[in-house]
Image (tube, rainbow, N blue to C red):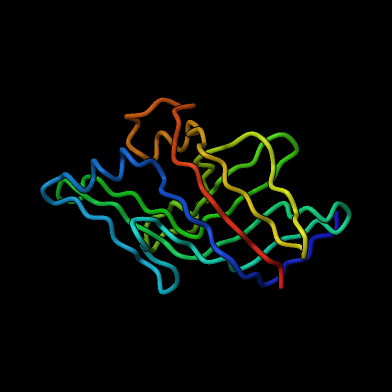
Length: 166
């Protein structure tokens, strides 16, 4: 595989797990805060801008779509804290993984596979990749990240993205 890292245009919209976001919002001190200079919360959606595509030059299917931005969920006077930064869509043969840096500030990055979805995105006319799976499944690490109140395999939010390599 010949990897080509290229700047990309596009975005990822992903709401993690809506019941988790609702739970945090209902806490007396619960907060959902955007923590990065890029992206943000738009119309209730977490929106992460595309920053790069790692392209497999042999198959022309990008195995990794990289997005920027970050969100922090907090509550219970700091006892609840979940950081999700710089999500990636990592394309495999049979399934696609949504990973993110989940390390708190000041700690070396820690990429965690949060959720998976069967299949892979398609390249459409003009080289754009577009995908809108309706749901994903939490991995064991993803369930643990959200406080272990969900079982691995629990349905999580779907995502949508459109990326055009530069």
